[in-house]
Length: 593
Ligand SMILES: Cc1cc2nc3c(=O)[nH]c(=O)nc-3n(C[C@H](O)[C@H](O)[C@H](O)COP(=O)(O)OP(=O)(O)OC[C@H]3O[C@@H](n4cnc5c(N)ncnc54)[C@H](O)[C@@H]3O)c2cc1C
Image 1 (spheres, rainbow, N blue to C red):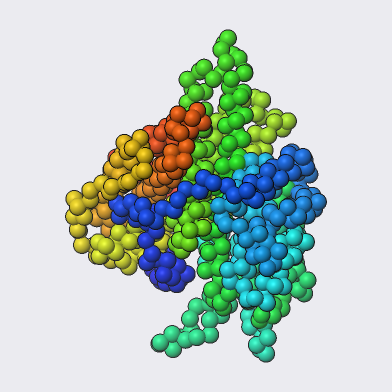
Image 2: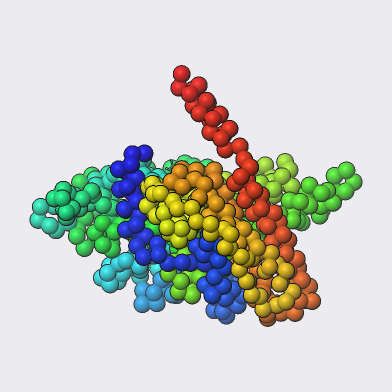
């Protein structure tokens, strides 16, 4: 990528992220070897009565009326289900009461998504696309007229919404949107031209948030025109020039959802359909996706718990070689990983949702880590479940092959996991770089791993790092807290070492950035687990069998996560990166010749 393009993207990233760049969230603090306990919200153990009732009603409705196998086979979620989800309140869960919604917080909304994710991946994605990333943009960025006009019917499910960002040239590189909105001469609106692909609900929605490029008419100091910027528009399918090229693309999983291709031909969009600021579209997209990512954690948790439950039962009853499967060590290894993984992703989901509900304004890193962790671990859990069930899982009369197909999109959509890993590392390291003074320039562009690092003055910060004190309210957890503190310090020292070692090249060292991301992700998840155990012990008796088992599960997660974190940090210095690069270059050259 050219330096100009990198600098352009850096400037864009800074503008979009705004003052969030300068805020120090809990996860960002870890990069500097700090454990900012005061930024960790209370773990939300309690479920309010009305939300419990709603969750129970939703679970009962799912079991009685939503048949995931039929939805998968017929590649459609019946309209009656959409209407009932609206009636139950799910489609307007977080939307304002004035629009008929329930104004739930993120934690309560996650409880609903967990139920849906544990029952039907397609329905969970439909709700997420409709509610989390559609109307959310209207709530956060819409004018009161826009909100009044669209929200009530979106709450009831009478209207469906979609969020259209992706295009052939704009996938992970979301800033590369090519759809163009040209202002009309009379200033009344825009003519929109372009195409969108892979848009969930795109062909069936009545309200779409569409990202398109608008010319920036302001001039730079040197008199030249600024580059065009991306703007969010509210689009309705009755606008002349709106075309549904394909309403339901046939696909691998989440087949009940309508994934669509759209095109816009000289489509007139009135000026008052601009959502948020002109040129502020990427900010809208990123803000909205930040919320959406929390619900990935919730729906993955639902699916993971389902798998653990089924796999344990099967392993206890299926006998081979005169023994139940659960007596074989390799099956036990899988069951232990699955239970601990499901517990950890649940802890991370609700802790992250609580951060949002507590009013933390910067939760970008936390939601990115939650998304990557929960989707990766769910994929492994489903794989292990299929292994434990053997051939039985391969047939369509069992849910596992469908769940595998449904789960695969999680690691691609709303920020591919690889991209989010690179993003998290660069974003987190930026502050350490600032503290170390010299890498400011390049590391300021975490969005696309772009920019160039300036001269780096080799501070010896690592030697200053001592393990942070992690206070727990229950003495039982002090050993775990002390170990986590040592991990945080070791991680911070390694970040500093990386920056000193690679200087400006760190932005392109994706092997290393991925290790940093995986290490810090599990440190963050460990913090969530520890906080949850500490809160549980505050309210319950440690001898209660269910509490005892929760402590065992959390303790096992913390122990095994610690080993994985050490492995990632060790691999920063002992790896095959150079050999990998040499070999893949040989491969690419051989295929070119
Ligand atoms: C079922 C489905 C539903 C969808 N729904 C919507 C929707 O409602 N609205 C919408 O706007 N979009 C939607 N999408 C699009 C989705 O968000 C994109 O697929 C996603 O953003 C990734 O873009 P891409 O598929 O073009 O992958 P690409 O950008 O081509 O990337 C492919 C792979 O390359 C690697 N990669 C890319 N860039 C980097 C990098 N910088 N560093 C390291 N590795 C990299 C990653 O492994 C990535 O997975 C949907 C997609 C699917 C399949």
